[in-house]
Length: 174
Image 1 (tube, rainbow, N blue to C red):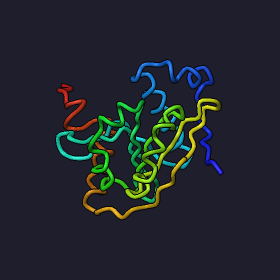
Image 2 (image 1 turned 120 degrees about the horizontal axis):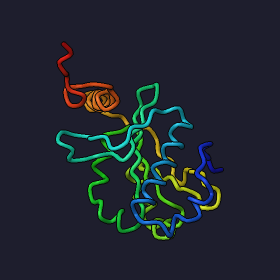
Image 3 (image 1 turned 30 degrees about the vertical axis):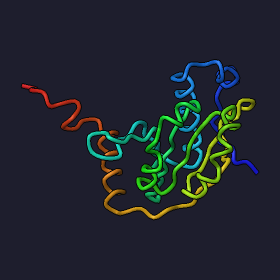
Image 4 (image 1 turned 45 degrees about the horizontal axis):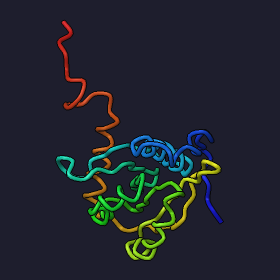
């Protein structure tokens, strides 16, 4: 049985996905992934640096009320997936990790399913007919180092803050 999110992309956007540029397709997938995470009660942060100096960045990093982190890597096409050789290193930065792709990419992706299961990485697909995101391969919670989890939650808090040392610097009022 497919679990389907309630946030839906407009049918026009979804049906044109294969004809879109990689950037447009990635943005549509990001919007769909955000809807999927919101359905499960998570706060969503885009482009979060996983370690110092931005050496690794998560496309979507989601935080639940139970302090569980779910990382969603968006792949717009096969070339995008193959170019990302460090995805297996992202696994230690979250309790759960998923790849999100358009269902037109499923044909070549099937060859990687066994590999994903061995790494406990899930797969989410955006259905081109309905516009819903569904879970193709589930992943289970994986333990995470407390220091890594704390570091990421602090990074997410700074990213969401209205003013920090890094943005909206102080100004002289009088």
